[in-house]
Length: 318
Ligand code: ASP
Image 1 (cartoon, helix red, strand yellow):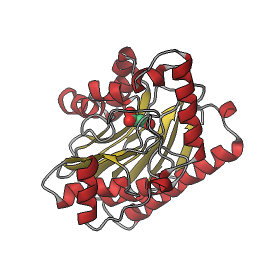
Image 2: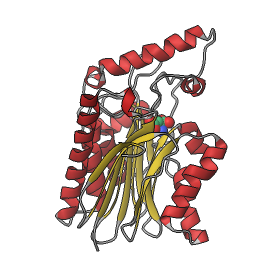
Image 3: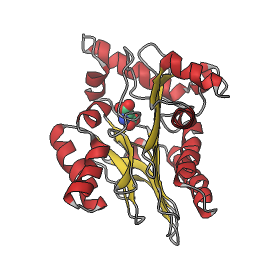
């Protein structure tokens, strides 16, 4: 079997005119580095699980994406991160939410899967589990970037200008010039035909009240099952949760015998649009087919199939 790997760094209003070229070039370089890290695992006959974790690490460490270093700020100017990982071979899964001090949240999600009897840990409990399992706590300032602080202030100024206190759902619907979702994710099919999916995020700018999005919810933003596909999503999480996006794609394949491409497109460009949900997904099936549909005008993304060259893109026509 030939391996296949796909990654994303978020979807949204991404047009060439919105970006200094140097910024776009650096984001592309980091996407390439993530593909290289995940691909190196797969080239060495490593597992899809190891590959998606390695790829997501690179994206979490990059300031360009909304995960790890560079995660977006909450309403109170704190950072609260969510992540999930799923093994398509066993359908074992691990997820964490509301974590503030873990450098690579995707690895904590994996530790929950491998070292606890649970699937989903949240907040202080998740951090206590991390410390008990060899993770170190990093200072919250590690995650902070100027750019995300400017975005928070812009959203809060819009809130104030609208004369009302909006929840995050409404805030993100306001006409914010460079509205985008910067969650990161990876999906892979390894040479043994095993699938895996991983997603990591800071959530939505200005979120509050312990809001959690789709990324750490198995079947919404993250899903993997060798019998169908592995999916990682990015977009307006509230809609992705209600539409059960990732498991809906898998269910269409399982029960309707749809191909990966058809199932993913019907959900992302069909039912999700009718619903009002903005964003995209990356997915791979057990034959190494890859699809990266999005209903926004751009999505940071990349893919690499064994025997082909790696490709990264940001804009729709990249
Ligand atoms: N899906 C994420 C959330 O709603 C946001 C994103 O994709 O950037 O938390």
